[in-house]
Length: 452
Image (tube, rainbow, N blue to C red; front, side):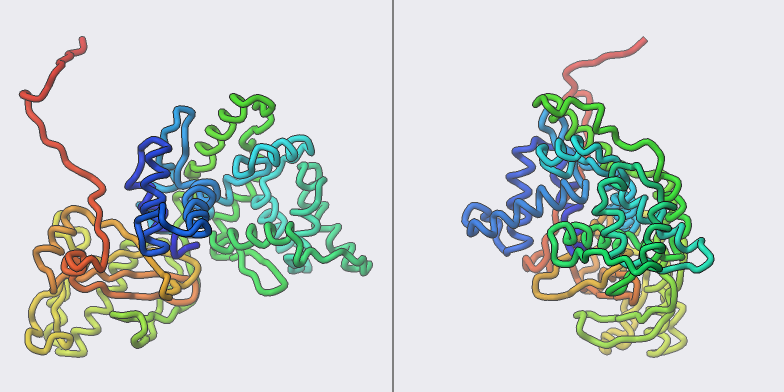
């Protein structure tokens, strides 16, 4: 999911706002090329067409809340999508998704929503699970809870899902049944268990929990985010019960309002960048499969962009210094200098023996994510460049490089894209203009209005 997340977000940013028909047509074309190598959506086999539609609607829209559709049929980028593209902090994005999520919700078809309403479901499941794990770790024995226990006692328990049972009651019931040896049915292999595992996966992508095959426990490095989840457990949620779901207009209003709510950015979580603990291996490669080098990237609250620039700056100083120590002062960190179109000025050094002191211009693009990029045959990624950066790519050509940094839980990957302008001319990468400047004068103005 993290491999495709920037692709979804940039697609939405590029297409919106537009009508729903335009979004579906252009989105299908975009994703069919990204996923299957052809922009002719209509000629794909039916199974592939279904896959494309699923990525566009069920994943990018319904699950990930990257766009919303209003009552007039217009599609808009959500706050969460804008935040993701601005911060490139994937776990922070997923934390917002988990915090906003609730039962009942607008991710289900109307017949299932009506069923939840009939059963008086009313819970923020992720907030409940986090609160339960938090309560467990505060107890003297600090019992670890299993995924099966949370699945059975919380996410598959009607009274809990109705909001009628407290976190404390659930915890003590789990421990009591453990002590008494009460046998509880296993959920493994069931349809319900598949959905429960997906919820655990979202909490892992949010960097809120750690898991192994049996247990689930809180990530202490996200203590501040965990506090937000615990505090939000009993706060008012999106009120499904305020809608007349028996009428078509009521259902339309419900889904439009849900999409707007679900795609909102929580201001408390927005201030909390992701932190990964422990030293990590830094994998450096021009073409991914090459060598590795050890380095330390510990927990930090620095913006991911600044963190990536600092990492690449130090790696460049090390590379140039290993070539000739006296040339290290030619490596300059310039990310705070406006209008250059690159973050670091370095030199070719050992990687260009004929022109070792020729300048190298480096733009750093960084992302924080929990999982490692797959880099397999179907892998893809997407990033945003400013007009200044693309002009610099055209100007410096073979001496312009994009260093893509992926901060993950276990390792940090640094991959290099050399001469992106030439790669674009060869159709090896795709570059789309996303913003345009419009200059105009009095000759094109049709109406003038001066307020009092």
